[in-house]
Length: 129
View (tube, rainbow, N blue to C red):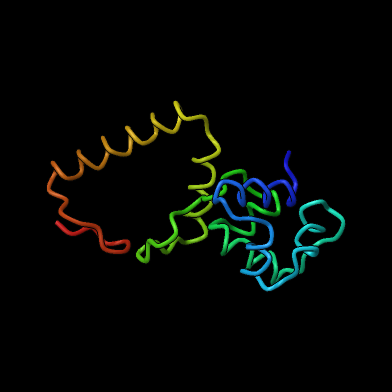
């Protein structure tokens, strides 16, 4: 299980951001970031949020609450999940790929059958025919 420091280092390397650059982007010193990455000290909540924003992840990932660094696509302005939907999506993403693929196929099948039966669109909880 990776800790916050390891996750920050890994994401920083994936994004090709040097330690001093990340420190500047979130408004702290390079030494402070070094201490976070090496578990010498713990960042405040605002720093964790800033790290998550700059590294395009979530604070839940940095805090080891979830394993997917990007559980939802950022930039999808339309994406507003209810807590139950977010919970379902996190459960889906925790499954091995073959199981997720089967579930996606079943959802597609179900939606295709609804469309064939005359369902034109979904609006909130309403189904328009």
